Image (cartoon, rainbow, N blue to C red; front, side, top):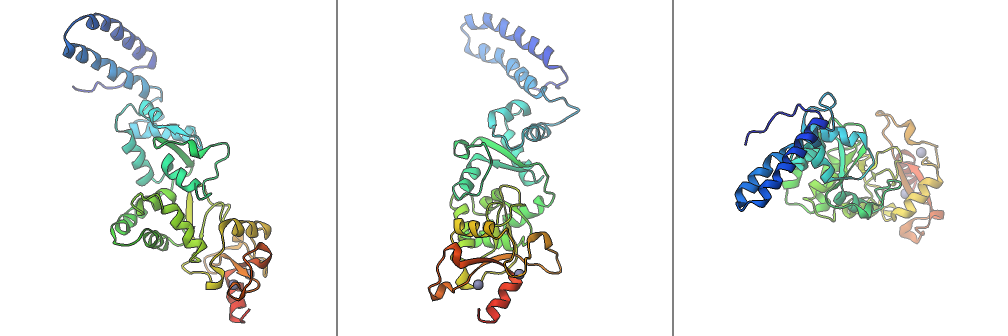
Length: 311
Ligand SMILES: [Zn+2]
Ligand SMILES: [Zn+2]
């Protein structure tokens, strides 16, 4: 059946729909199943038209634009897939959501990925119970479009196909994007949607000493749901095994600044790329404890000096 163009106002669509449903009463009393089914088709189309007419075409001209308009109207809000079905007026709304995320760089997180990040304490949205988000729920977590997303997607696709473990793939993707935030959804994609991805990212930080930071783990300025490899280097072996809760409390205690020279991320510049690491005052390998009292935040330059002096 040919789709009619959608030009009507919500009010007049509603009236047509009422008329159709009213006359459907006659069909219901008949015996022919097929004629009942066919009589309902125009009502389905009108209902879709009614949904998509809720967002005026001067604000959004396509199904994808209406979905985006709706997300941007309600950022940091759990949106059900059925709402997107209504405003888009199409059955394939989920594909449009994926395009917005992948090709257009809008940070739209699905309930599945949000829960996986939340299990690793990486999804702090106030007032939202992430554990109640379902697989067809979505949230726009950042109002700013990331224009490099399409390029990253190409890289992600190459790495995804390699015969590597989940952690190795994620590391390779992060190392292809040093200094640039990537999204949890991208890491999840690189990991071929394996639920372990969020735990593997945490292990890169807490076991292998890669400076993978997030809003709650080292860089409060980052948007929720993004991960960033600050530099392509691992912290010294004796400083690698530090649990996240300890790391967070030390960074907060030190005001996210180097305890030796006072450097913090506000002073970052490309000619002097540093980041903060944690250093055991008494070497962990020599029995120094993993307690906050034995740990200090230190910039990578000062950290290298300490270790060069055998400290
Ligand atoms: Zn320093
Ligand atoms: Zn150290």
